[in-house]
Image 1 (cartoon, one colour):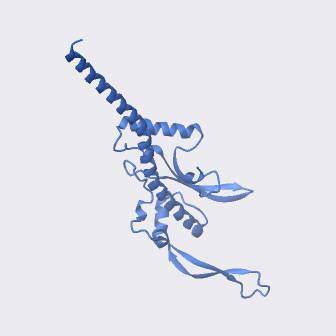
Image 2 (cartoon, helix red, strand yellow):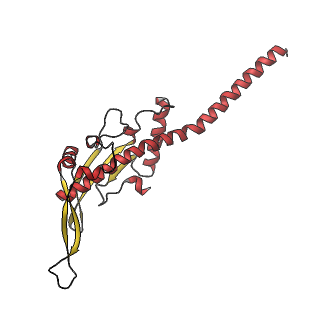
Length: 213
């Protein structure tokens, strides 16, 4: 074999080896990068769901029910006040066994929700972070019966398809969609919601599904 041809073949083989090595490294790094991007987005989505939960809990304290309307919830947060209550002994009780609620004053709901946060915007409450076109969370409210008693419940949720709609910087749209669909299938295979949610329309809970993992 001529020396020149041998050099060409070696160069081609080296290029093939480099390509294969790059493909192996990419196949290892891709799921890690996807997982990191998913986690970063879910951190922001969870933060918003916690805000919704806090607002719903305060709404229920004032109205004895939750609301399925973001407009009502946001308006409540903008205008309502909640009492600051201290439990003290009942001064009329000589047995010293009874207590009463002593209202010390009132605080604005908005101040309670945004405490210590400079970038809190109540008008963003209904929007899913990273949604491609300002999609809103799905919000439901109602009651369930437990031991003959109607118990108020609510649920706010958003699926992978919303906050994982747009691809991360190092992914093609096709590859991103495939990894998102795979993640969704994994959740559905174990009968879990493929997304993030807080509360439940079936249980008397205000937990988020990220808190149950």
